[in-house]
Image (cartoon, rainbow, N blue to C red; front, side):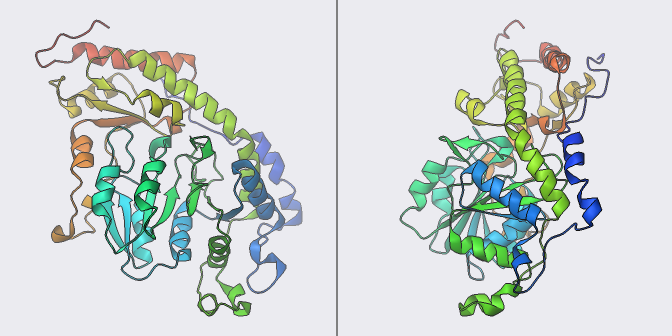
Length: 400
């Protein structure tokens, strides 16, 4: 098969001269971190960290934000701030980045895997109901690929139980659920600022919450917990923390990046809608529904193969797409319940995610590229060329 895309696509890059200019003064002062441990005014960070957190509060309309050196760190201390007990059960989706599982295990908690809703790839509410027990103390709700969980349904299930919700919006900073920014209406939420997110500071993360107690605990845990020696709460006086602080350079970059977020999201949504609408007539290619497309800010652009129609298997289709020069294909998402970490007897089955992972799911890593109109047209042609070659199961294929 002849290549359609014969050049390397331009990498996505949100950092430019604006960020460079903003940090120059730091090399004059030499003050690259404003944090000090102990009982002093710099315990909560330097002026740029504090300024960045203030701008986050205003942007997302949230009371408290705590910047950290990564969102993985954010997950770890968010769970710890919730004051859960050893071996308490925490439900998480089978499909998510391993940091969610690591945060649970590091805190001495027990992970319970929930299957996914194959329409939007987030927590399956029906399976969630089955997984909740008297030992369930928290749920990590992951906004995957740039789209939000079905939060109203999750809250409906948990409202009469003392179950805390930690929303992981690492891939969905700036996405909205019913007109509110995701992660701002759960007990604790947060975003990632690592290199391939919509905006980035190289590495970094943001914890957001409207709960004063959780915000204070997260701030303590971020900076060794050393300020707790003056606290009247006996639990907090014994709290040991970490060094998870964000530097002044990253904070200044973050301030500039935040200014660009809306524009980046608008462009990403336009590109992805163009691809989806152009491929909607391909038989056997399943694209998400209109609600998903309207809501998602597209970290990944997900697809599924309709195995009831197409006779070719997923491996064949992916190989053909690669031969056209299509770049950034993701063909398998982390199946955490099947990690080698778990012994055979410990494996919790999640049949929906396992089935679509094996047979039908793939995605374009749109987070990695800055598309122009030519790129979009050629990406569409790659799909069309492959779909013309596919075999079908006793159905008439539409003309492309």
